[in-house]
Image (tube, rainbow, N blue to C red; front, side, top):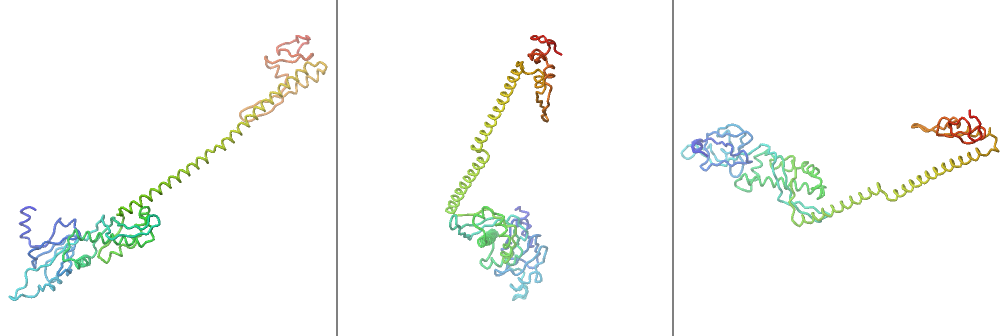
Length: 370
């Protein structure tokens, strides 16, 4: 503080505070020599001024500028008899009492932590004791109730001490609500939204008697004894192993369902059977062709058979043509097929000898081919 500020503060008899109280929830105004009657008291927006006499709040002033007199702080005037003249007939010009500036604004991330443990009886790791910590939206709604509650146990309140007391009060209530709920211990770890729902449903009613409002409670930590942590870690490690083994077992079953060696062998056997069947069919066709050729050759060279019957047999031969869309079987004239290709042989119409397709006369019997 500069020298000018000190001089101004010395001569300024008004009761007011600046930025020094912005981060405090309560601020005890310093007054070693007491307060003067008739001066102004300035209360900042977001704060209230509480006058305390004999460890009890007598008057509360809301934001604005007020003149200290009997009509503004009647409780102080009555308690200290400021309206009664002294032996000399003069009214008191000074009075002594504590003045607290209390922050009534919403604090978004107010930290809390319990100092009374919760107790869970679990089947997994036995009895568990621990402490909860978290954050919440916090606001002082009734400064009179809050100060009277703590002033009943101590003559004066310091901001740091009050923060600790309020933090523990909220934490202990949250811990009690969790303990009496139907939640299990491991729900605190695995189902945080369920925990928040349980706490927020009742926490505001539980703390309203202290003159504060608490909303949007969220747990941020669990403070557990080392023995409990060890048992919990061992349990979680075992559960993870069982989960991994189960996933590995399921994975192997999935692989077996996709890749079954027995099914593969069966499939190969089927394919091998189809291949053998195909080879057999091909062999049968070849045999039929060879037999047909042999038969036809024997017939062609068997001159005892009438020539007309031989020609009729040749003309009734069939050929198979295939295309991309379907297969059709057409009866073709064997003579025209043989005669349309120079590489084919043709049959002599007289003696039945096989001759080149381009021969006009049979080289064996000399019969003219038509």
